[in-house]
Image (cartoon, rainbow over all chains, first blue to last red; front, side, top):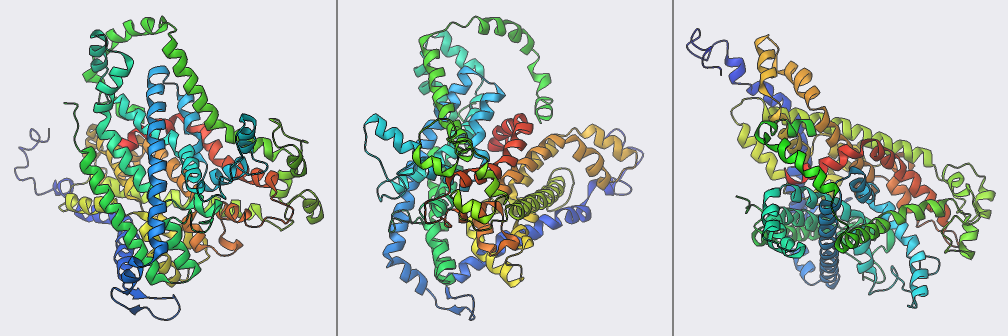
Length: 306
Length: 320
C-alpha cells in the first residue's frame, strides 16, 4: 500500500524513518513491563534457586551449604509424604474436574448457548478459595453441616470430611472442583465452538448416534484444547494451598500437608528459608517434568482440524 | 470484544445468512426426546450443586447463630436475624456479640474492605495500563529486537508464580515494605505475561487503516496508542481489567505472607483468620457466613454487570 506513494521519496530512510523504526519509543513502552519481568519474575527465579543452596533464617546472613538442603530433603519423610499427598490431590482434583467440565461443556453446547446459563455455571469461580473453603467447612461440618445431615437421612454414617485422614484430601479436591469446574467448562466450551459445524452435519447424515459423534468427532477434535486446559489446570492444581490452609492446615497429622503448605510452614513457621527454597525448586522441577510429559502425550501443540 | 473478533471474519462467511434462515425454524421444531430431557436433568443438577452453597451462605447469614445449633437442616433461615451482618460491620456491642455466639473480638471489617479495594484497584489500573503499553510495542511498533524481546517475555509464562513468592517476599522485606499495602501490590503492579499476550492479540487485529490515516495527518505513535488503539480496544481492555480485579481481590497466599497487622490486612486474609478465632462455645457460623457473603458481594455485583463480557472472554483467553 505504501509502494505507490513511494516514488517521490526514493529511499525510505528520510522522513519515513519515524514509521519504519520505533526503537526508542518501543523501549519506553516496554520499560515498566520489563522492570516487572526482570525484578519480579526472573530475579526471583535465580534467587530462589540460589537460596536453595544456603542455610538462612532471615536474621543472620545466608550461608552457602552446597547440596545440604537437597540431601536433607531426600531423607525427609514429611517431604515425600507431601509429594504423595499432593499427587493424590492432583489426581482426584483433575480427574473429576475434567470429566465434570467436559460434561457441562457438551451439555451447554447441545442444549443452550444462553449467557445466563454460562454465567451461573461460572459463578463459583468469582469467590475466593478462602470463601469456598469456609462455606464447605460449614456445609460439611460433622455435627451441623447440611452435607452430613443428608448422609444421615440417606442412611449413611456421618463423615468427618475435614477431620478424617482418609477424607481430608478428597474433600479438599472436591471443594476446588466446585470452584473451578465452571471455568474449565467454559474453556472447553470455547474449544467446542471451534469445531466446524459441518463435521457434525456429516456425522448426522451418516446417522451416527450422539455418543458415537462425541467419541468419534468431538473428543478427537477437541484434543489440542483439552490438552492445553489439562496443562493449565494441572499446574494450578499442584500449587494448592489456600483451601488446605483455611480448612485443615495440613492435618489431621500430615494427611493433607500438601507441598506448598509444607514450603510455607518451613519458611514462615520455622524460618528455614534455605530448606523452603529447596522444596520450592523440587516443586518447580515436578511442574516442569509433568508439563513436558503432558505436552508430549496430549500433543497439545498440533491440531487435527486441517 | 465480539465486535473485534467477528469483524474480520464477516467477509468470509458470506453464505452464512442462507444457512441462518433455514436453521432457526428447524431448531424451534426440535422434538422433546428422552435424551434431551435427561440432558436437561443433568444440567439442572449441575446448577443446583453450583448454586446451593451460595444460597446456604445467605440462609445461614440470616439465621441466629444460637438457633442454628438447634435446627441445622431448615431450608429457610432459622430464627431470622441480621445479627451476623451486624457483627461483621461492628454494629453490635461486645456483650451483645458474645451473647449471640460471636467471638466478641473487634474485627475492623471496613478497614479490610478498604484495603482490598485499594489493592485490587491499584494493581488492576497499573498492571493493565503497563501491559497495554508493552502489548502496543509488541504489536504495532516496528523495532529491531521486537521478536527476540517478545520471546523473552514468553519465557516468563513458564515461571510458576508460586515459585517467585518466596524470593519476592525476601525482596519486599529488603525494601522495608513488609506489612504495607504497597508491599502487597508491588509484584503485580508492572505486568503479567498473560495480560500482555491477551492484549497483543487484540491490538494486532485493530485495522491499520485508521492508524495510517492518523499517521499521515501527522499524529505521533504515542497519540495513536492513546486515541486510536485504546479506544478501539475498550472491550478487551475492560475484560482483562475485570479478570485482573477478580484475581487480585481473591488472592490469599501472597497477602498472607506480607501482611501481619490490620494495617495491611485484606479481606481474604482476615477471613482466613476468622476460623482460627473460634469462641469456646463453637464457631459463629452466622457471622462467618455473613462475612464471606460480604467479601464475595463486590465480585458478584461486578459479575452481574459484566457477565456477558466475562463469560465470552474466557473462551478466547483460554485459547489465544
